[in-house]
Length: 162
Image (cartoon, rainbow, N blue to C red; front, side, top):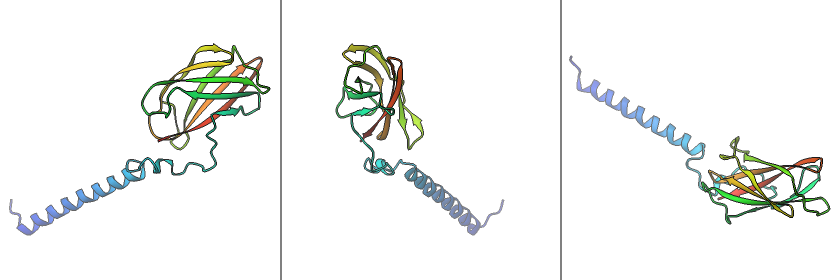
């Protein structure tokens, strides 16, 4: 096979150029999709008027719910438990409620990485929730669905993890 030095140089430059193009595109995609985002930019696009209150009235006004994470500040990739307190709209504790937990990251379109559950009714309207875990920084929603005394309602809490 007879190849001239010019053809070999051209082939090498095409290969180097192709590799450089792939690296540039990969770096751009990594940055655009969050790999290069700092923790402060992980909050980009989060609505500025979010309510981060830990006590909220349910959507139909049936219950008042307070969340109290056992960890402060909330940590990433660590299982922890929470305590919920459920009261009627006039402040009476709600015992014997059926409570389900959900949530996720609205900006990412995925739910919680675990399935938190109420593991114990503590009395006086308080409930222990175990199995809560967040796997990345950003804006999370924590949904609480409650059925008690022939009524059901739900509430969503906003959380910001750094």
